[in-house]
Image (cartoon, helix red, strand yellow):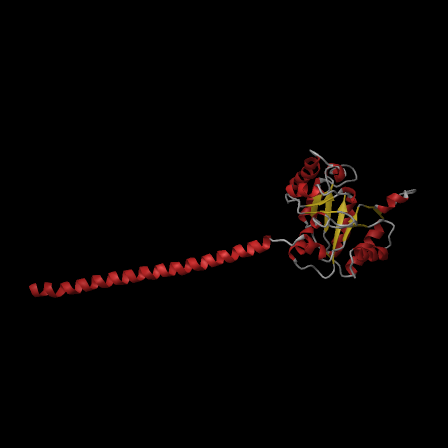
Length: 294
């Protein structure tokens, strides 16, 4: 029995030592695996940070100004002229058939509508656009922009941009909340055209909140989507508007066919009013000339 005890003891010690060695080895392997895993995660995080930084960087003003402009059309009323209509009003009222013909020729000529988000990404990051991009925009909330404008665009898969003057929502001849919500739900862009169409050149004090923030909040309450784009009434602007727009969450703003500001081109993107007196051919030719497109 004594011999048995003396023979068994070394075996027990050997087994215990082996377990300890194996355990230590496993711990070392676990530590090594953890180090590798942490290294991979750190590299992935670093790469993600780099990508995020790159995504947040936007082009400078000179680069934006050097980019080819996208044709941006501006419509107001779409209806047939009443008798004895003043010539000046014909500039803002496009007869129904003229509008229909214009949508058809844009489609037949291969134009594709883009959103302000796509135009912004193109200007700031160089994101690609269709070969023949165009933006179709509407000012002032007129009801026929929904009943006629949307109906014609639907035929060709076009999407529009509606610059809403919020004081007019629900009034006779203007769109109501349900129509504006439907436009947003169907993929059209709903943007701000102030509360009551006062010229931005006259803003001071509380005007910035009353005209820019009040309209933005109203539209967002209707659509449930952020409002990030603005159109100046009459196309008139002043440099003081740029920081005020930015503070209130606007990424870009649209003027008419005048020159852009060289320091803030994102807040002076050009549009072209389509007069009711133009033929379809005149519209296409003027669009190409205005935006330097072939």
